[in-house]
Image (cartoon, rainbow, N blue to C red):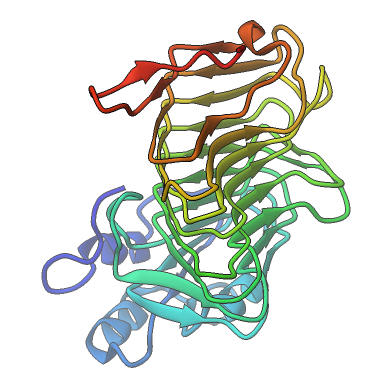
Length: 300
């Protein structure tokens, strides 16, 4: 996905609007109506659906209400403060923002103060290129509702927390979040944890996480073979060196259930929590030192 904010106005969105075949379902657009130039241009370019309805909305809530399985929602520049939690109940829905990278702030963000920002309640959901601003004691994205959810892909996003914001991504709780992939994102200042991982066959990799005092970068929960076959690798985690933890392993995964490797942790009071059988899954993890870095032995 390329930058769709550059130049005179959303060249890629215009290409999408002209039905470039990138999705199986409908293409739906969210744009600030105050961006009159681009809003009018996109509205004029889009062919109405069979019912004569133009697929341009001023907020994500209305776009989700209209969307069906296999649809793609493109979110244009702006900060969208939705009144309620955004519930994704459509299978294989793609929610695509207009930011350029997960490791830099972009011009497109979803904001909340009194609820979680997104609840994923369907299989095959992809979330990409969005910013998240959470100013309340809630989560950015949660994948835990009334049944197991499969194949959620969250990538290229920026998650901005606050002094009270709890989790950036909460993957699996009472119900499983099978095959969740969380990669190439940035997490900043989530009071409880940037990533909560309690899901089968899931991955947290190549994320950049800044941990506040008393916070956790990645909280890994599964025990033994329960919700196993996971990967936590190639994450860069920087802490405030004040009772914070880089990677917290709550359970004791058994052999073959977790690969924990090539993570880089700096400035955290606790780098990686230790378990009785850490040697079964941990290798090549590094911590910062005065000399520049050292391997972490998570079994001692």
